[in-house]
Image 1 (cartoon, rainbow, N blue to C red):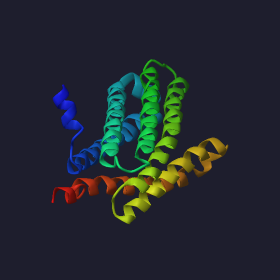
Image 2 (cartoon, rainbow, N blue to C red):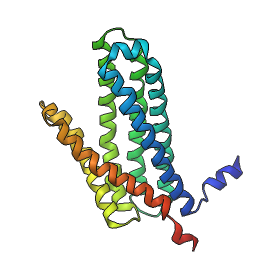
Image 3 (cartoon, one colour):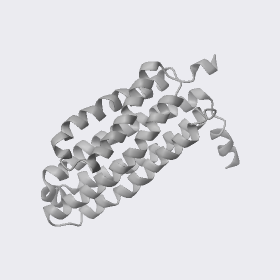
Image 4 (cartoon, one colour):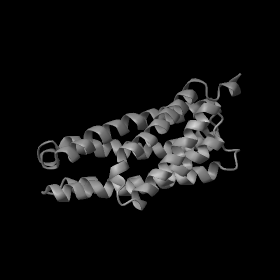
Length: 216
């Protein structure tokens, strides 16, 4: 056990970069399935999905759990990778808050499987979404700090900063605007574009080039 702890605390930058990049890719794949297959199925046809296609909901719950696990792994690896930056610990705390809140939010989905009316099922989905939305506020702060911490090309830093700001703005808008639904599609685009391109670029850069200078 002590040997294992010593190994994980002495990983070089290249190994940590690969862990972060791989973790991000796993999170992306799991998130696509969980959101666009599991949650979307419930929203489109709640009764049919819960009563006759519940396996997709159960798989979606597992996918969300995988996201939480790798969120923690990525948070740890980023903390080790950028351990010398003064903002790293703070950034890690905010990402861990996001992971914790998402873990709490997942609790609503198994309860949805026990409901028998459309209103009750969708209420559980709303509960999940609102708790996760609060988590994304803290995630946005993490990403904004990461844009200052990460040693990556400037365009990736800019995309990460924009993504962080938009996560924060979108959460605030949800709770501040009574007619948020009128602007939902606009906010979705404003959040999705910088976050997808920024975080994916960050992950790919770490996988391809991250930490290589140290090994030369």
